[in-house]
Image (cartoon, rainbow, N blue to C red; front, side, top):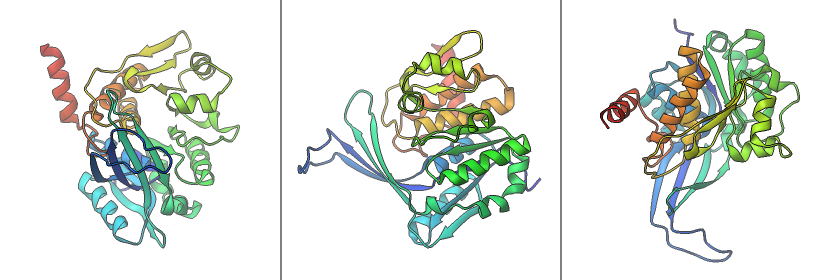
Length: 303
C-alpha cells in the first residue's frame, strides 16, 4: 500500500564537512589536515538510509534548505529508495555538521552541528504525515529537531500504538511522562550519563528493563532483560571512521526487532552493522547493506 512503510524517520538532514586530522589544534593555532570529505549526514537521514540499505521500506519526515545542499539531499534519498514526500524545502540553509576524525586506533570523531532547516519541522507537517505514521511498523526519532515536534510525534505514536524508538542525541531533558510512551530509548555512553548522572549504567538499565539500551561503540551494547544485566559484545574490525555508527546501530536494531520481536537478537544484529559501518568513511556511504552483512557472516563461518 502507498502509505505503508516499515520505518518512518522524523529527524535531521545535514551536509557533513569531514576533516581528517592528526590532532585537535590549540586555541589560536592553525594546523594542516590530512584529508577532507563532503558527504551527506544528519542523524535522521543517516538512520533512514541505513534502514533502507537493510531492505526496509522507509519514509523520511524533515526539512532541507532552498539552495543546492537541499537538492543534493533529496537526490540522495532517491538514490537509496527513501520516500521524501514529507521532506519540506524551506527558506533557510540545510543543516550542517563539522566532523573531525583524529588519527588514532579508534578513529574517534567530534561533531559540531548547526541545525538550520532542521528546526523548521512543524506539527502541521506531522499532521500531514499522520497516514504513514499510523501504519508504520516503527518510528525513529532523534533530538536534532525541535523538542516540541519530538514530543508531539511520541504522543501520536502512543495514541496509534506504533512502536517508537528515540535516540536522545544531542541530549536534552525529556518530559517526565515520555519514558513510559517510548518502546525503546537508545543513548550512547555519554548520553546515558547525561540522562542519569547519579546512577551507574547498570542501575539505569535495571530501572528501565527491555526499554533502555546503551550503545558502547566497539564494546557493543548493554541492557537489562528483567532478569539480568546483558552485555552484548561488539565485533572486531579495523576502524576508518566512527561517524554514523550509532545511526547504523539504531537502524539495524529496529530492522531486526520489527521482524523478530527479539531484543537480544536485535542488539547482536545492530552491533554487527555498527561495526561494519566504521570500516569506511562517512555516515551514509559506510552503513552496510544486507549483502555486506551476509558476506561478513560467511567470512565468520569460514574462519
